[in-house]
Image (tube, rainbow, N blue to C red; front, side):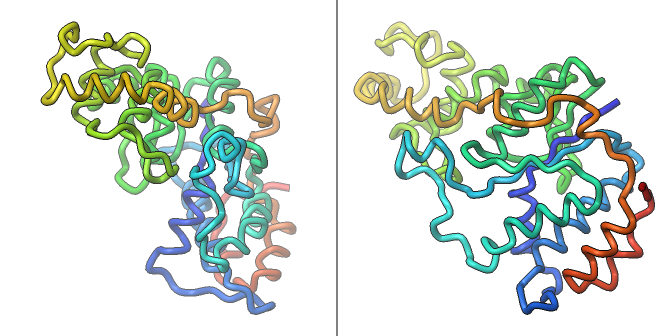
Length: 292
């Protein structure tokens, strides 16, 4: 038995900017992204290799979260295409209409929702499959029990593959991001710390606190080590803040039982009614697994 956790906000943005036909609803609203997400999820439900039995989709709604109170430059709704922002509620309705549980995050982010779901249910299922390429979610990987799946590249990353690629344990991902920064989330990291240097140091020490203050005491010797050590010493508090921003919450409000995320088939009447609401004539014929 698997639990599939999907980053709905990522899917919404991807569908909005994808080279697919536009879709305008009966009210004149741009619904290209919403229809694209529903179509993509129906494809996942039909994928025999994935064998979806338990599934939830987490959304940022709004994008702003508690992290904006910690760091004012953290990502927010500012600059989001209004046509896309207007679909945040509509897409959640569409996902519910195909019988999939929706975790709509308010104070938290979709990433926190997926992290919380993985932490809550990883001991109750054979595998949790986190369906997003977002590197933040790498910190949730545990052996082969919790894995990360990039559907576009058809790539599955378990803990062994993560360690081979990154050179450190999944749990150290927030420390790594504290050094490199994360442009998608809006925090810069520390000057001079690229992926290779940060990976080398975090691979050797695991946590920011365990990196010796003096480069002379480092067991690894990245290029420019003395300057890097000086930068880390001068900006340690900033690095700790960035790590806090990058650390996913595992106690966000999500389902309390697997029954709440069980996929029982697409509810025909509800789905067909939703298709009429958005003006789709092609989607009603797509589902293959009908429920009540």
